[in-house]
Image (cartoon, rainbow, N blue to C red):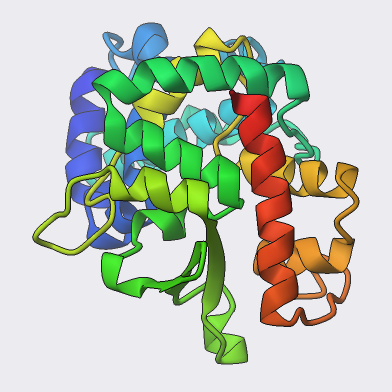
Length: 287
C-alpha cells in the first residue's frame, strides 16, 4: 500500500476522533503530512521505505527540529497502524531506527519590525478572511491562548466601562478552581463587534486560523513565528513598557510556578491598566 492511502486510513482510524479534533492535533497532523511527508513519500509503497531514506529526510529538516520531529512522529504512527492492520509485518516500522532531534525550549517572539509587517498582512487578510484575521489580531492584542480563544462565547464577555472581560475555563481551572480571565481593551471589543453573531453563540465558531496565519507570517518574512508565540511577544512588549513581570503573569493567566515565577495577584483595576498599556503599544506596532 502506498503511503498516501495508508495515511488516509490511519487518519480516519486514529486521528479523526473528538480528542484530537478538539485539541487541534488532527489538523496539525494533516498539515505535517501535506507539508513534509506527502511530497517525499506520498507515492511510495510503505514496504519499500528504508530507515536510511527516512533518516536522510528527517535530517533534511534539521533547521526546523520541532517540525522534523513531529513529522517523524506522524510517519511512525502511520507505520504502527500498518503493523496493527497487518499491512506490514510486526516490527517493520523503519522510523524506530531514526533518532529525533534534541529540541531547545522555544523562546521565539515577534520583533518590532516583524510586528509592523504582520500588521500590513493582517489588514490584507481582514478583507478576505475577517474571522480568521480578527482571531489573529485578538491573540496579538491580548496574549490569549489561541486554543481557548477559539472556544470563547459571546455570553462569556462581561462588558465594563471602556473594556470587556472574557471569562472561560482555563488551563489551571481544575487545580485552582479559578477560571481564566482575559482583558479585552476597547480596540479588541471593537474588532469583535464587527464580526457577525453566530447561532451557536461562539465568537469565532469552528475556525481553522492556520492557513491565514501561514499567509500572514510568510508575507511578513517570519515563517518560523507561531501564532502562540504572540503570547511571548505580548509579555516582551509589556516588559519593554515597564509592566512588571507579576502583572504580565496575571494577564497571561499563569498559575503554576513551573510555568513562571510565583506571581502576585493583581487587583482588577491594575490588570485592566496593564492590558490597555500593552495592547496600545502592540496596536501601534501593527499599524
